[in-house]
Image (cartoon, rainbow, N blue to C red; front, top):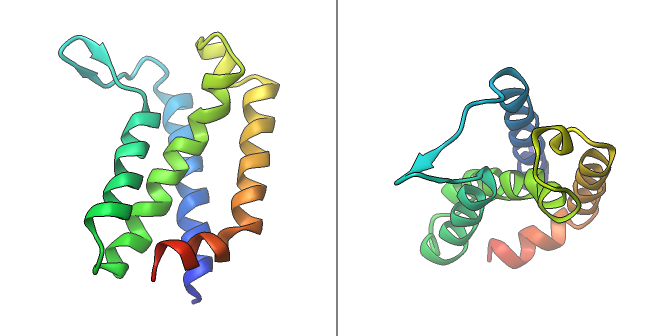
Amino acid sequence: MKRDSIFYILFVLTILVIRLEVFIFPANKIMIDGLRVNHFWIGAVLVLFSLFLLKNYNALKIIIFPIGLGLVADELTFMIFSHRTSNDYWSVYSIAGLVIIMIMVFVFREKLLSKTYN
């Protein structure tokens, strides 16, 4: 299987799994010292980790980078276009924005990979 196909499949699976998890367990929250941590920030840390700390580990990067990107993409439009309530997470704006981001990642996946995995 081609590298860009693996990348996109992991990206989409991450989004589907996190959406399913939020649907099944809507009250499930990650708390650190009383502060709620959204999966956006976990994804941002994974993306940064894969880009800067794993320079020579392309096999690990092909797993960590799309998972982190999927976590970021899932919550990005929700954070931008809503009041951050659980109903807004399932709003038309949140889902439509996510679909647009998924299409953009699909179209530019080879360019993303060429810049990321040198």
